[in-house]
Image (cartoon, rainbow, N blue to C red; front, side):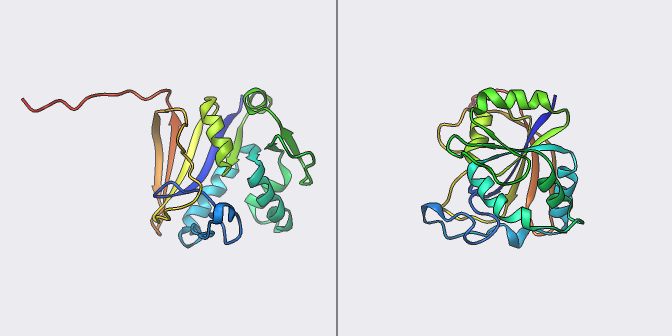
Length: 205
């Protein structure tokens, strides 16, 4: 059975919207597109190449599909492991409104809670999820995430879509690995560990 691995880029205040460039996603009047790029270096690139090499398939949301499908098929560089993986491996797109997918190897997922467990049984390595905030929140609520690669960048934006929004299911996480890139981004690997536990600060005696 495959593991579901989520990779998401966030700011210190949890914003995940449009990390890759201006105009990538300006919904809600967002004007900070491209905030990640000053912090993306060879270290970060090497980590993602290592990560994508383990993928057997991808699972993405509607908005991420639109962004990726408009960009990656145009990257014909055979030396790019990320482009090669995204363009050749199966891609499963979670959407209840899309009726047609033009990117080769793309299939629709209508019901995440029902169909994703079947996808995990279909594959034996890893299913990678990129971005896709609404989808990731649903996957976490359904306890379908096996590992979360959270790329935390040293910038605060104050506006934009956040990964962990109000109403998400409370979840405890275990930090299993981390690295810090030269520009100061933290790549933290977490594994969900069920529901949080709670305690009380004892008064001094």
